[in-house]
Amino acid sequence: MPECPYCGRWFKTKRGLNQHIAKSHETKFGGVRVLDPTTIDPLGAAERRAERKKKRKKGFGLW
Ligand SMILES: [Zn+2]
Image (cartoon, rainbow, N blue to C red):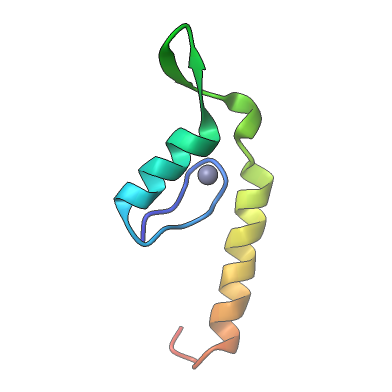
């Protein structure tokens, strides 16, 4: 599953991820798409990752 490197969300498809990045993490600067650093959320990404691990453990014990 592709995961957003900026906020930790994940997506079913690479295309969904790319759309998300274009919509949520990029801004237009002089007609050029550039990454908007204010949208990057490494803490949130880490939290979401930890949360996912917890859920995995609770699940069916496959992990
Ligand atoms: Zn993101």
